[in-house]
Length: 616
Image (cartoon, rainbow, N blue to C red; front, top):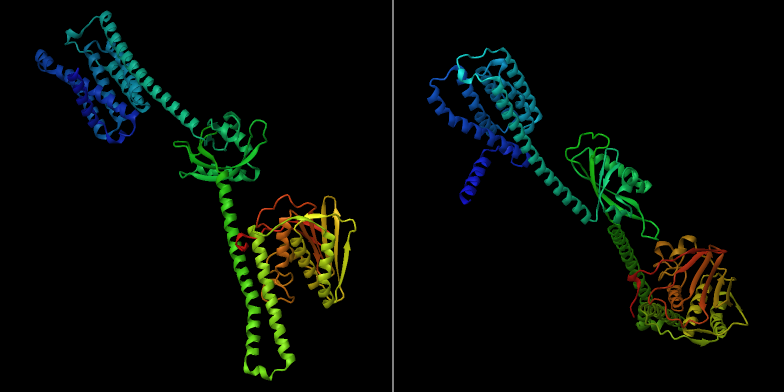
C-alpha cells in the first residue's frame, strides 16, 4: 500500500507540473485539464508500447497502418499542446481529429463504408461534450462528419484478410466497445457532477449559516432595485420575515424623503466596480404589542460579479449589506451637540470673565483714585464739600463692589448646592410689607410710586424667609431702577390654589422681544446690545434676576416674565405653600417663561452653561 501511495503521489506531482498556470486558480477547469492529460498520455503510452511488437509481427507498415500509427501519436501531441498553451478547446479538437483518423483507418481495413467501425464516429462528439466544452464538442462533431464522408468515399483495402471480419461479429464488437466507452464517460461525468453538487451544497450550507449568524441584513436586488432575496436577519432588523422584503417590500419601508438616495445608490452600484454606501431612515416593526419605530440604516451595495451589464430583469445585479447605525448617529449627534455646547460655554465664559473683571475693576479704580487724591498734599486745598463728595464716591464704589461680591457668592452657593436653605413657616404678608417699607426710601428718591396689593387672607408659607426676602428685594429693586420718575411699581401677593403668587408689575421702559431669551444671564441688562458689559445706563450688577432664578429653583417654584418696550414689565414668582419637598437639582436655575406683556408665551429659557457655574 505504501508503494502504491508513493507511486500515486509521484504521478500527481508530475501531473501538477504539466497543468498550465492559467488554470491554477480554478479548481473545476484544473480538473478538466488533468483528466484530459491523464487519458491522452495513458492511451498514447499503451498504444505506443504495443507498436513495436506489432511491427515485428507485420513487418514494414503500409500507408494505412502508418496513418493509423500517426493518429495514435496525435493524442500525446494534444496533451503536450495543452500543457504548453492551456487551450483545452484546441487540444480537444486535435484529439478528436486523431480519433476520427483512427476510425477512418479501421473502417478502411474492415470493409470500408460497410465497416462496423464507423459507429465510433458517433462517440467522438459525445466524448468531447462530456469531457470538454461546447466549442470542443462542435469541433469534434465537424471532425466526425468529415470522417463519415471519408468512410463513405474510400475503397476498402483487400490486402488485409485478417481484418475482414463477418458483419455478425464486427458489429457487436464495435458496438459493445463504443457503448462501454460511453458508459465509462457517463459514470465519470456523473461522479464529477455528484462531487461538485456536494461541494455546492456544502458551500450553500456555509453561506446560509453565515447569513444567519450575522446581524446585518443582506439583500440581492435586480436592476430596478427590487429585492430578489433577503437574509434571515430581516426578522431582527426590520421585524418581518425575509419574504416580506422581497419585491418592493424593502423600498416601501424606506422613509419617503430617503427613497431617491436609496434607488440612486443601487443604480450606481450596478454600473460600477466600486461599492456605494448610503444612509437612510427605515421603518421597522416593533416588538409584539409595541408600535413601530424608525431606525437609521447604512447600506453598502456591491455589483454582483459576473452579472450582465445591464442585468436582465429578475437577475441579481447588486448585493447589499445593511446595518443599523441609529446608535452611531445618536452618539454623533450628541458629540456635535456637546461640541456646540462647549463652544457656546467657552464664549459665555470669556464674556463672563470680561464682565466680572469690568465690574470689579471700575469701583476699585474709583476707590483707589479718589483715595489717592484725598491722601495727597493737594487735599489741603480742597474744601469740605469736595472732600465729602470724594468720600461719597468711595463709599458708593465700595458698596457696589460689595454688592457684586455678595451676588457672586449667592450664585455660587445656589449653584453648588451650598446655600443655607432652611424652610420654616412664616408670615409672608408681613415679610412683603417689610420689604416694601425698605424699598420705599429708594422709590421716593426715584420719584416712583410703590403700591402694595397683599391679600388679607394669605396663609402661612413654609419656605426659607431669608431667600423669599432676597427675591422680593431683587425684583422690587429692578422695578424701581428701570421705572422712570412718575411711574408705578406694584407688589401683589395672593394665594392661587395650593401655591402662592408674588408679582411685581412696573410701568418702566420694558424689555425688547430680542432680549427676553437672555433674561437671567449673569450681568445681563436688557436693551444694551453687545456692549452691555461696559456701557450701563442704569446702576447695578445685572445679577439680581440670576439670583432670583436660583432661589426659585430651590423652592420648586416657577418664574415668568411678561414685558414689552415702553409698556412695562410683570415678573411673577409662584411657590408652593409648603416648600419642604426637598431641593431642586443643585446648581440648575429654574427656567423662565417669557412673553409679551398681556399674553404669556411658553418660551423656555436655557440653562446656565456649566462654565458659568461658580464655586463658593
